[in-house]
Image 1 (cartoon, one colour):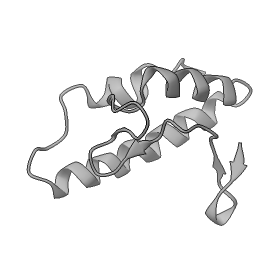
Image 2: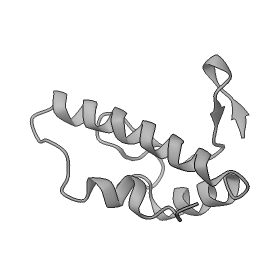
Image 3: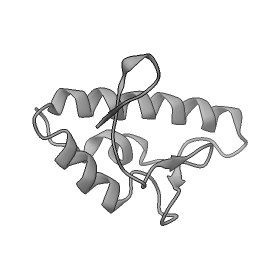
Image 4: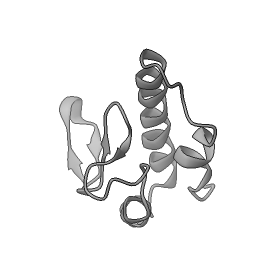
Length: 88
């Protein structure tokens, strides 16, 4: 992990969500893609609550992005961003 703006821990992966679509910047799949899920799980294995916080913040940003667009959020929003992560 690296420290980003304001000292916040930022995961190290090339598979990040491209805003405002929230598709993976590398593979084009809905983010978090399979590769991002594996890499994020590995990076946060000792801090599972941190993974939930990170994914929750991404979810809120995605909701804002989709609310500003015409399409609205996808139906699987919770499952896509948070449902896959193991409960701590």
